[in-house]
Image 1: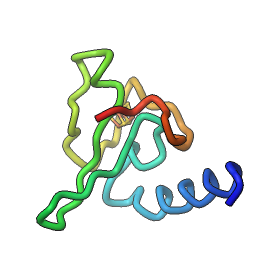
Image 2: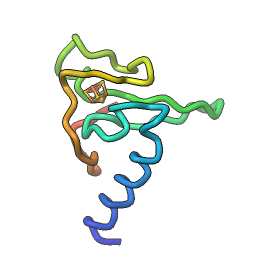
Image 3: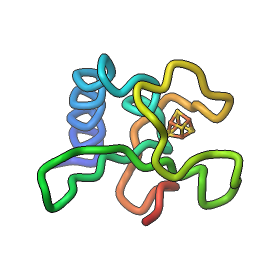
Length: 80
Ligand code: SF4
């Protein structure tokens, strides 16, 4: 899989999730996390650099000053 197709695949998944997740689904700082109990939540990579952002935003996020559209690439800005 090329880097481009990986990004397009991730973008498709994020667009599909955007209804229940909101902006985090298409934000380059958003990252889906699956718990061991099977529930899914989203982590905000901006929280690592700015404490004004919650690490795990309450969903759906409908407005956010940190939103930047784009796919998170492997090794990108979101961190654990
Ligand atoms: S910056 Fe905002 S929209 Fe982006 S992941 Fe964080 S909370 Fe979600």
